[in-house]
Image (cartoon, rainbow, N blue to C red; front, side, top):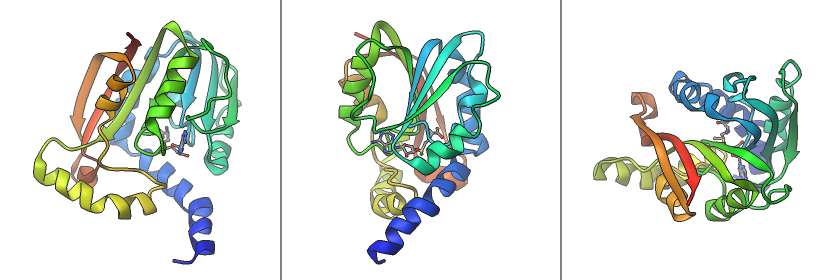
Length: 211
Ligand SMILES: C[S@@+](CC[C@H](N)C(=O)[O-])C[C@H]1O[C@@H](n2cnc3c(N)ncnc32)[C@H](O)[C@@H]1O
């Protein structure tokens, strides 16, 4: 595909496709389990189209900062923020360089974004920096499947899938990434995606505390 078509696809098609895909029931079931745990000043990295917004508990959240480098996704999210009972600010930036002070957040939320962020280790280092010492990382991710045969398919499909789905990688290991960044994982939940989404591999949700 020519460069102009690729950038048109990335701007005008991929964000809507990702929004539609991430609205599936399988994702919503995990969101409703862990997003209500967020409290205080919350930073959501890879905010996307704001699909977590309905699951935040207004009695616990005082303020939310949603961060994403994709202006189209942020526009979809911003349209949903007006009726919320807590203030929401949308910032256009990558997770690898968060425009926030050290110790800014009580909670950082990342859902289905460590698969897409080009340098997830750098983003996790930034998340550590902006979290208060007693802060928590709440995450939901998909990643490597358990069985070797499925994993091989994930490796084969990775490039094609990434070019369709906004740079999403099928073959990352989100739990290993989060642990390697110095988080202790608790409240972990696992699942598998239903058949049409089998290529997304294992489904993980949990809470990470700074070690
Ligand atoms: C699959 S979507 C998930 C969106 C949302 N978190 C959700 O749960 O529906 C991945 C998101 O990661 C964002 N993203 C891509 N590169 C990023 C980066 N460097 N830092 C932060 N977010 C990034 C994309 O723009 C996209 O909104």
